[in-house]
Amino acid sequence: MTAHDDLRSLIAAPHPDLAPLPPAAPVGAGVRLLRGVPYADVPGARPLELDLWLPENPGRQPLPLVLFVHGGAWRRGRREDMGYRTRAWNPGPFARIAGAGFAVASADYRLSGEALFPAQLDDLRQALRWLATRAPELGVDTARTVVWGESAGGQLAALLALADDTPGVVGAVVWYAPSDLTEDGDNAHSPEALLLGGAPATVPENAALASPLLRAHAGAPPMFLAHGEDDSMVSCDHTRRLAARLTALGVPVESRLVPGADHVWHGLSEERLDEVFRTSLTWARRRVERRREAQEPSPA
Image (cartoon, rainbow, N blue to C red; front, side):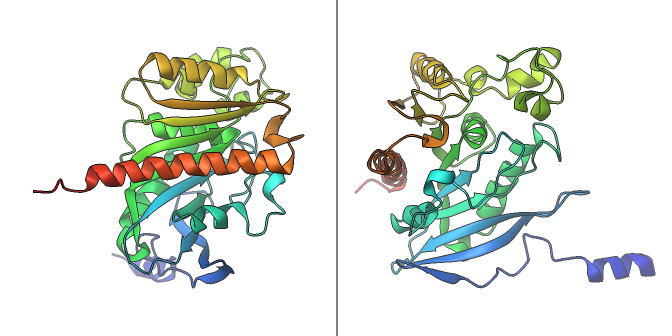
């Protein structure tokens, strides 16, 4: 090893698998937040980070996990944002999920201006790998993970749940997400084309790999799908078709088409929005409770 190599090893930031966790800050209701935790170093790219909301855990039992994936047409968006309708909530949506007994991780991923698909999916796999590596000190049970995403993040969450190499995912909550990226075939300027590296018709294999509808398979984890009936950006037909495909394959699916709601729940009353959120959270709780029951040994 040269002197330069020694110097590089000294000045490099600690690897995310070994780096000290940042201090936790209380955010109310017995929830603490670890903000900006590095989870992956991607050569030539910015460090990828996640935020962690952890509830009080007096029993020290490992907590089930929600991995949240933000939207933004794969082109923009921030990990702390669940959509503009929840920005004024106090406590915020992630604190509410944590208050229901989950650890919540909301992760960065490379946007389409930084890397083409499947880089985004690779990043989220890395987030799950990091969470599993650090699970003992975080008090997290990654074998009871629900992935939850909205819009473009919902598409990624669905793909993550459908992948064979993401053990521990017991369900997915998918809000108003595209499920078939092959539809807008000839548009070279669509968000889908910018994600895939060309109009979907010119990269058909990648478009199919990025389409939950075409990746659905028997034995996939259950899914909760919710979509506004009046969505003007992502037709609710994407959710109808995905729900029908999963059902035909024997995958448990609960689907909610919400009247009067546009994309990102625009136009929905606060009362109805709260109902959608609570229903999604209750579904997630049922999923992790069933997995815990399945993990417990049978009485002798």
